[in-house]
Length: 631
Image (cartoon, rainbow, N blue to C red; front, side, top):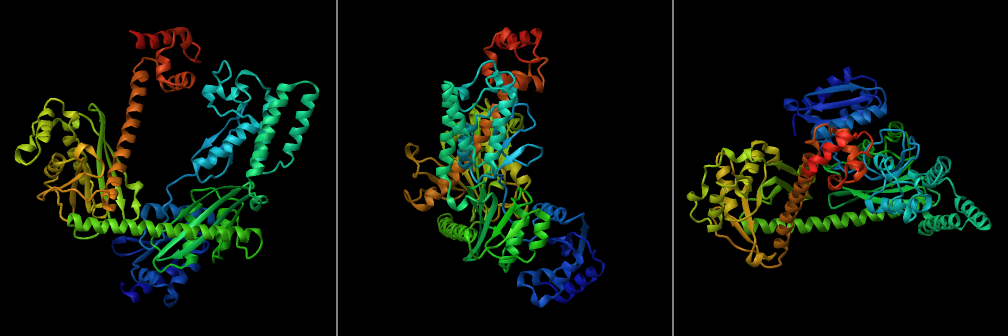
């Protein structure tokens, strides 16, 4: 702990000049290190609370003792203060703020009501226009389930505008009765807008008599012998009936509510969120905040609400498992109601949410125990100085040397840290200055296969996995800081990779870093891999042991990430090279062509006459495209 008296004096000095206005305050320590970022409706009144030192938890006492100075930012209102606070916390990651790892966006359904014939589709991201959004849904499975029902019941199109505007006949969605085919005039604009409004009312839980109205319409269609219309209406009624059967009566009267419960156990805190929209449970998600040492439930819950709803649209009501102190501030900032219930239906549901939080935290504890056990085994088998806090796993992927990718994934005692994953695009020119090297002359113990690969690299540099790995590690270590220094580097490869990496990193400080290469065992059997460390004899782990499975999982995750990024780069390059090299084809024409034909392959097989059907493609341009693919 720092100098308590000095910290308090510095705090009180800033209280005198603090503004009595809404805004954000920053507490700074030695060398302007950001200790804490907070928000307040009245900054002066808020920071006075920190001067009551004896009433603070130990964590905040430690913080106050380290204060050197403070900075204030005045904003217009509580909402702006909340947004700015979260931007600063995510950017600076202050050591005394409770941090929420929330880098995921939830899927929504969106109807583009500004269009002549609005479409219904899935969407991720911020709401930035006047469209109608419904959700969030906690998983793709949940949103797909609702999308399927709505398509059956309301027959709205789901295609993009580029495809819609260029259709000449109905697509498969019309044939399977999931769309009314407005693209080719099978429904009038007026009737289609009626479907859109019915879908909106249904998703908002407003139209409770829709099934009755459709039943009347079906009977009327049958009486006038319009059996085709009657069958369509019957299928819509069936789809709506399936929703009614699937709905839980507990949620029937709940329109737009997030249910949030907090549970604490074994120095862990789990916050469980249930999304309930229009009488339907749209799924749930658990969160495990970090840096919660000595923080009480009230502080953690308030920090969660501030962080979570800075990137997610709040519902009309938030129901909590317990009261919070700054309820009015958060209600004002989020433009919603925050409530707790001791009895009634919502009290029953929040207790169920709390039970889910307890189950999530039990699973987390079990997972951490398993990971901890495996990390302790790593210490024993690989002679590590301590339990590793950061393991970096590397793999390469290329297609006969083309579209080469180096991939790095990161594992911690909490699991995979996907925010720290990195990809390295490898170009042939990256290797040219190393072409004359033959590292394996220095290492006669390297396998014959490794030496042969080094020789082959003189002819085909961009296929040499050893040089690729060296390039990746050099670029990674050039940007290494004390904060992201790994304890273990795990390589997918054998002695060749191991020696290549040690040679590449000879000018870096490798103290405290264990470099381990993992190679396939006999007949490339999983579970019989060999492990190699510099200056040590290679060995294999006990077959089907937990530590062997753990290391295989680390390697497989790196392989999955490498393959995925390689395929994405290859796909992007292929579509770019085959269209962007054609004179007169810019971004807009490329988009229109792809929207119309669906793929580059279809474009390459199209006639000049077919190419001219795309809006903006003249006969001259069509001839250029045709000639490019055929001559």
